[in-house]
Length: 410
Image 1 (cartoon, helix red, strand yellow):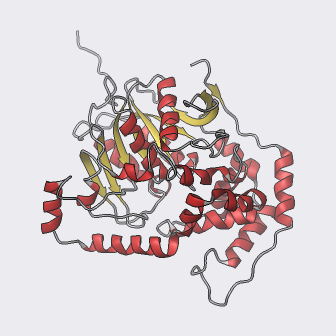
Image 2 (cartoon, one colour):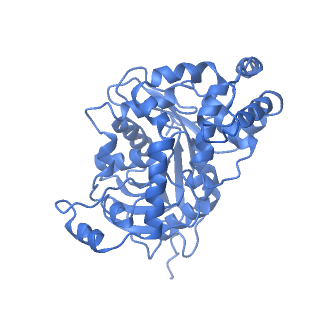
Image 3 (cartoon, rainbow, N blue to C red):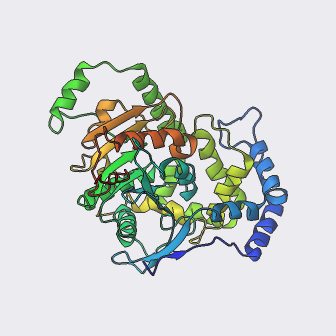
């Protein structure tokens, strides 16, 4: 592991000065009376956050907090592309047989989402497994480099994460993810089933069971009435498709166009992402410091503020692994599903079971899209239960069940 080096985030003073100048020159649109959130991010919120970003927010203070995490960097060679420097958080448990866990974020998330899981999963106990946690910044995100040519899609993101785990010495591992993290980790299960032994996901993009592919599930679905949770989930998905998914159409078709705004205007980037932080969570009490730290990570990202949107295009313009493929059955990889009421896709459980061999399910009364950040105790609980001694994925990683070995009695 000689090529794996500690990493320190250190944004140049010149970049902070450039940001301050751009914020000082910001211009804002007008706003209709009573618009609220109906038209997008409210003017008053964006003006307040911009003012605080310029005059009160302390990036260096947040940077120091980031640097308190166990940050590392290494080079990953993805087939057909130039080598990429990849940033990742790596917390190794003191328990030798801890379970290797890859945590994968999405958009507009980042590696910081794992920070709230780290203290909950490292130590384990008599009846609780411990985990070695690896959380990369995906290529094009945060402090990882991005590719310079077309075609870096889900298969390549999966290859990056898989090769990182191999480089750390984990020939077998498990995964956890939401948003693109869900699709990337499921792609890992498709491409590397001998290595990716189980996955836990909190964005469940399942489909209605079909009589040809899932006859037993189709029968269960046909005779089981929808619950109130199911109906509320359909309403949430209807809202998202009709009122909340415009960003996806733009980023999936013309990411370069919106990229000009994100690369030139910190206010445009702020408004674009802040809207999602509000709409996709379950009344989560974001502080201004939290919001601006997330936005600043995108603004200061190694590949640039525009790069992260490209995953939407590449995942749908491909002859390799299409985004829709991740909604099909993935065999041989044990699956855990966590349902949160303010997720963007909320399907009946019979639909979720079309994704693979489900060994664990949980359902929560609150929580949204960024589950590891909003509800870290819930995600940690799921992982401990799913991979605990009584869990359906216990012992799935050879030689690493998460429990300290007891000394043999003489």
